[in-house]
Image (cartoon, rainbow, N blue to C red):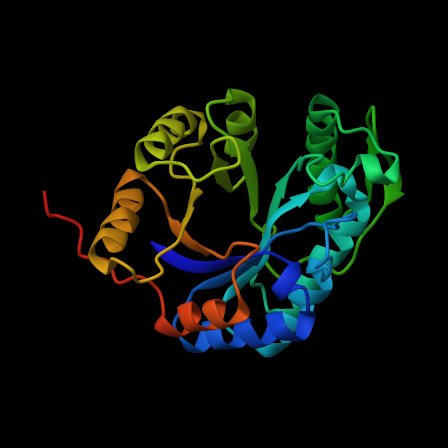
Length: 284
């Protein structure tokens, strides 16, 4: 299991320099990754400070040299897929091949679609997400690429340079259990970011979701599964046991989640304590 920080891109964390400093400290303290939410905001109250995740990740890439970086997750229907393809390839090369692209449909919570005159319809966004992923990966190939879809069209575009990672940047897909279609979508790519009605899964729910996904995967294909939560140190034995339960259920990443109302002081303290220290797996 690998360990990362999962952080909002707004509120106390809505500053690119601050995020770069936190990422540098996370790398120094032994974390394996640092992942940002991708919200654009509308009017979210008195602290409506946001950092664009792609600019923040660029600052983070310049401040680090080893940890994995990425979005968890970028709602692709809010973005032009050819723009995301270019940004991601550039960032992957800048970071030396350390990018993961987490994607999903997002939601209209906070009016991140409707405030800008865009449809909040989830079914529409699911279809747009599938087309966008085809376009992004097609453009990453470095070969001339065309696409005719219901929502997007590309006519003879060629993107160079290609990403540093080959055959491409890993793609993780958000899925809300027990809905099956998002899990089938995730199985076509490289990992799943699972939730239950926008909340943390239990280990048993993760095990059930992965039992559904695994028969859909080509034999031997690497596939990441994320678990989220907090280990603030209030009951270290219980917290460590919970993370171990997720590992044993099939999670390949534990992402230490920072909430929007967490303070910078708390985030720094948690990062400095380092990742959870898990017991060895029991031998068969």
